[in-house]
Image (cartoon, rainbow, N blue to C red):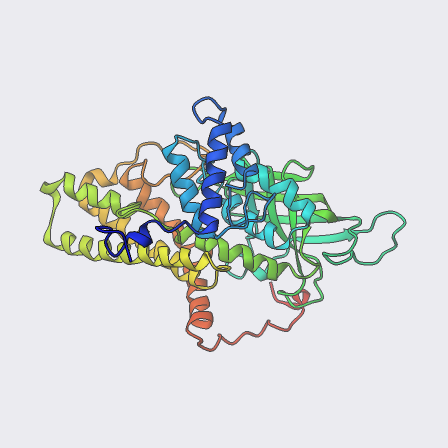
Length: 427
């Protein structure tokens, strides 16, 4: 019998926390007790947070995690923010966090994980992605960058061992990559290259980690519609990559790359954000601040887009819950598709609402920004930059194919190049 006046929920209110929650809370308290955010240097705090297993709580112990449920990361974030702790500036290192890290965790050797994940998470080493090429954008598997294995002396001419075997020799890489965000800032790159032109295009690819400071790596700015050189083109000439910087088995690069691409689309279009976050928030504020510019047509369009943005936000939360119990799937492609369409429609609405002021542009100077910030610039910038949302991270046309085939179960489009050797494909 419950104590007098306790009420029916008293036993629930006093029940202990789940073991995982209590463990994470204790880890947070220990971190704050030994590293006061008010007196600890930012980088020292971030390193300590990683070492305490509070970088990615769902990662293994020793790799920035506690082996706890992924959903508990929000608890860590909230408690550290309340204590005034610094974050790792995730917008600046998004490629490393959202794409490289989960791929390294899944396919990397223990040595690779322990060497790369900590400075990746703290932001001490920035990452970029060397995937797309001038002749292989939407059809990424058609890439032509070549990696030729050079055996170590005394080991003969055989191919290198698989991921679980001894690694020997190095790879000589030549080719060109394009649309490479942050290549001018990056220390490391995730790279896919063709290692066997005699196989069909999806089967002759291998996945590497490229040191952007190595000889033969040349980064050139690629000026875009906004006037900035946010992207780059990267030329690889005789770049030598040791075989111990390979991720996964030789010839299995497409399978590894699919893990990266699925995580990329989730990182771009998914995630849990507050109401009126991002572009819809900017448009809604412009509507409230300028009643003199309102029209009935713009009002109807704003209402529709606001509802669609809310639906996308809730879908992102649902996707985050799915990620808490497994790897990302093709649903991330749908989120990224919705993100691109909404950003373009909302930015167009804002420009129309702002009338002449919406056409203003603050600075066309060619510069190389550290990150993309849609909300800190004017309407004209947002409109132009949003054009790229339907290209980066997978074109909208390719994402529609993925959704059709892998979500809706529709038959794939007929392809004549599926079984042909890459070297025999027309170019």
